[in-house]
Length: 188
Image (cartoon, rainbow, N blue to C red; front, top):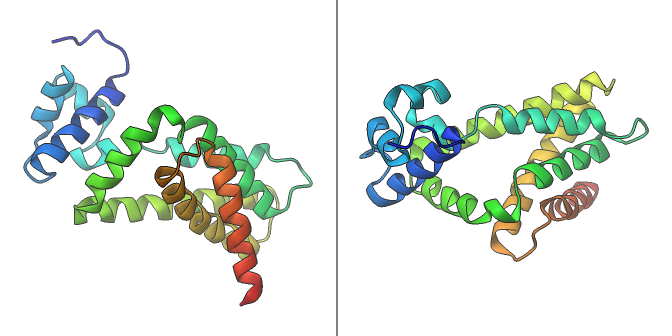
C-alpha cells in the first residue's frame, strides 16, 4: 500500500465516491474505502468519524464562510459580507479542478437518503456559521439570520448553476444568485 502519498483525506474521499457510485453507499464498507485509497482502516478513522462524513469535509467550508464574512470590508452590508464569503468558497472549494468530483458527489448524494440527510444538516451548519460570523461583525440577530438564510438559498442555487454550466467562477455565479434572491424578496 502507498501509505506515504500525501492527502489521505482527499484520497479517501475519491475512493469512497468511486465505491459509492459503483456499489452503492449501503454496500460499501470503511475497509473497502481505505483499501481503495491504499490506506488502512485506522487512517480512515483518523480523518473521518464514519463513512458518511467522508464526502462532507468536516468544518472546512463553515470556517471559510466565517473567515470570508470576517474579511469583508467594514462598511459592507450583511448580504455583501455573505457575498464576500461566497467569493472565498469559489477560490478555495468550488474550483474548476474540483468540478468533476463535485458533480459526481452530487449524483451519489442524490440517490441516497442518508447522504441527503447529511447534506441538509451540513447546509444548516453552514447557515449557522454565517449567522455567528455576522453577529461577530455587530449585525443584529434577526438581520444576521435573514442574511445567512438568503445566503444559504443563493449558495444552493449557485452550486447547481455552477455545476451545470461552463462558468468556472463560483463567486460570480453566487453573487448573481444572491442578487436574484434579494430582488425576489423585494417583490414579496
